[in-house]
Amino acid sequence: MEPLTAPNPVKFSKALGMNFKAANSNGKIWFFVEEGADFEVVDDSDQIIHGKYLCPWLPCSIMVSAVYAKCTRGERVALWDKMREISVNTEGMPWVIGGDFNTILSTRDRAGSDTNRQTEMIDFAEAIEDCRLLDPGYDGSDFTWAKNGLFERLDRVLVNEPWARIFEAVTATNLPRVASDHCPVLVRCKLPSTHSGGSPIRFQNMWIRHDSFSDLVQEDWGKPTEAQGLLNLQIKLARIKKTLKKWNKEVFGNIHTNLRDFEEKIVKAQADFEERPSPENRMGINKLIAEYICLLRMEEDFWRQKTTLRWLTEGDKNTRFYQS
Image 1: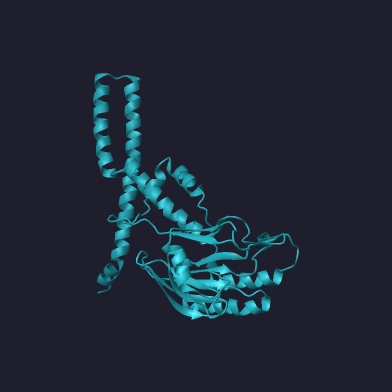
Image 2: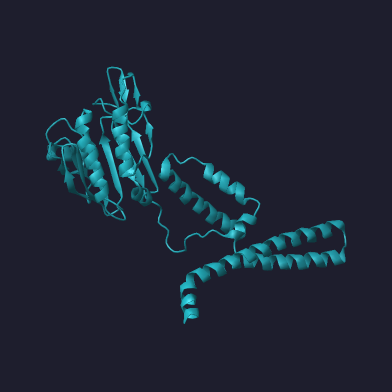
């Protein structure tokens, strides 16, 4: 929260139905969490409060930073330096940072004024790049602040790479402005669906021999994700994995069983041709044989790949054997 009054934990905890956990040094940033969760302050300053959020529904603790930046470029230098410091300390841990940065990142984030803010945008962009943060994108209004005909996107949420690996999707929604000149930003994160049992998908070389493989991949990869950057790539990879798993089961099933089934079909087709040697029966045999040969090549690909993987797995043991 970014309040305009002194912290009043009891009053606002009842109103929000959440527990008050912390406020920053000047009381302008407050933290509330739901029942069962906790927030431990790690770093506190007048423009940012940073800490560890613990929740039993998450696979691990996550780092959260809330920002309420100063209004002038010179005062914000301390914020950018603090962000860089936090990024080093949170290396490898999922981290989300968001709030009122009181500056824009590009000219598209402003309407209603032609004032040159290039140097401020560069400062902000360099801080984001140094911290290796990603913008998950947003929906809703293009601007989060409005006053006297000036519109700007001053509020935003950024995540790091480990965060993008923990959550399957991150969506920021700029809600309507009601009681403030700033609009609230709602951030929703989706955990990947848990799957018990089974093994991770492994690309099968035999797939590329199937006529529909290329179109399947192209169609699935081209679907939008409502995300950007590395998060967009992560979502696409997770989605194509599910698609290929389902397609492999439906189209290939058990390739060895399919081969036996085709052998029986060919034997029956040849018997039908011997009883009635018509062009239609001959064409049926040729079609079955062509499909059977294609399956044989796929099976060869399967065994060749399986042998290679086994060699890679046992390669170190094999090397030690020959060395001895």
